[in-house]
Length: 218
Ligand code: E4P
Image 1: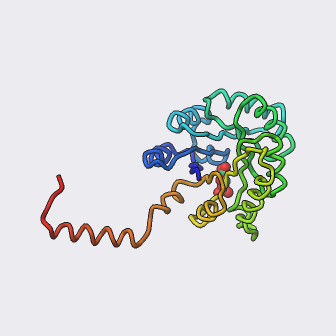
Image 2 (image 1 turned 90 degrees about the horizontal axis):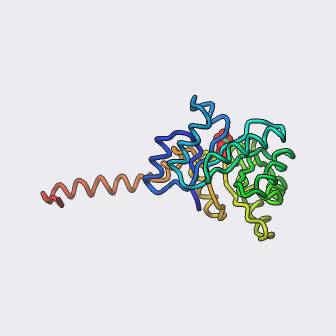
């Protein structure tokens, strides 16, 4: 399963890359607004750190303007995935950009049928938002299971299921159990995966016992 970082924080992205935990990056307008930085130069910097797909989202909801934005974003680097909303106009942009060889990530997916439409429009990635469904009392992971079943039924579509709006490690565990292609996570959620109290306790014991030997490896 691929790990994408759902952030524009360059230090966090570098950190994950250094650990071998970075297969791609996703951003959205809220993430960019939070960064307080200029969008295009920031995406350029991210593309220099990350070889995998870097999602950059269009800002308009109008087809013609989204097309222009998407074409501009696609020129930033070869690994850009233009992110478009799951609307009729967004799917039209998806079809057009995909036909021209640009990766497209269709975002704000909340139903299995929306995911099927994105696959038919040639999306490279579909982004179902599990956390936001959990927030309204639905089980976000049920949506992932449904989409994976539907996509498996139609192997002619090669759209990858990119589990988004991840809030905690359990979402990642369930995504892996279901066989999702990608999870995009805030870096702090990926970091939680490293931790286990028995690892900490075991390491503390080893450090203490090693001191007793009075030896040094170096
Ligand atoms: C995905 O591409 C989105 O950027 C993101 O996962 C949304 O997460 P949120 O629901 O925590 O804002």
